[in-house]
Image (cartoon, rainbow, N blue to C red; front, side):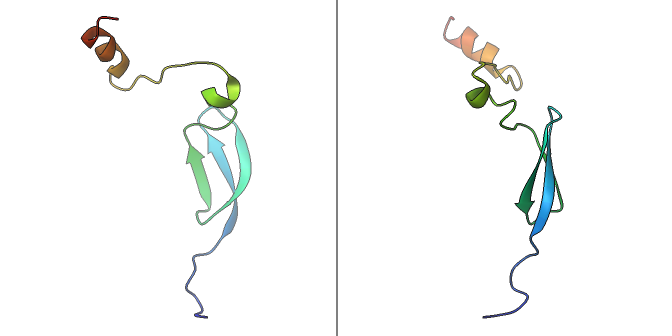
Length: 65
């Protein structure tokens, strides 16, 4: 088996935009994520639209909703 082939694996802390942080393993030392299990609609049961550039409003106008 070849030596020095795989990247270093770190025990790191991932920080979410909502402020939650958790420990995980990664090839990067620090991780910043936009959404985690504490704020994701699937896990919280709350529906929220993440409207990027007015896409939801454009869709509603296009289909008369």
